[in-house]
Length: 314
Image (cartoon, rainbow, N blue to C red):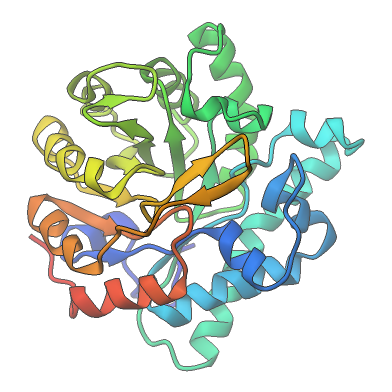
């Protein structure tokens, strides 16, 4: 199944060969702007259980802003995280699948309202640190082996793949070791993936040079795009060029707004620095999936879509 259910709709990989696609922005900020409280360890995944319609509406807002691809609300949805809330594995699997269904429903509504372009769904698989809900995804180095991380990720990825998204978004990965585990975990699932690191300057959050981190995906047949997300917009400039040069694959880039998260005060500080005009530089350097992450809303995505215009490819 593709985002556009007509028989002639291209796969996401096929589309990336000819044009640049617009990703959505942050799920959590869109839900919060609609009045939903996300002060919970499950974050936006809590609404999959309690109010899935809110998730669908958030996706729809991004499709209507011009996004071609939306990312599901499964970033922080794990069997272990749900278990801490008393949700068993069977129900947890249903909620993971529901994250894909909710995004598909939004695509259907967007087409019913006149969207004529193909629309795709990316199933989010966040890092191990997201399940811990303590900011570990911005550090990596959990003290787990690659094999242990693969065992953690594989069951969730199997459920998400069975729900038939267009791509698996292996996102906000802080550590090349976890990337190795994820690349092993997606083998044989029958669904393509993108691999996206969260970075600090020219290194992963765990301190590995980006050249080495990106190289892990260069020969991974399952991976159709490599890049960065949940980082400062300025850090994306170097990362996009490096990912394109090292892997030869299309690049995915969706940074934060540029504001800084104050973990102690639990609030964002500073000002937004994601200027829509800078996406042209990313496109010219090899980016083919461009959007935003934390604090980036439909307004900015609409501006990015407008700047990219007809979104030519290479």
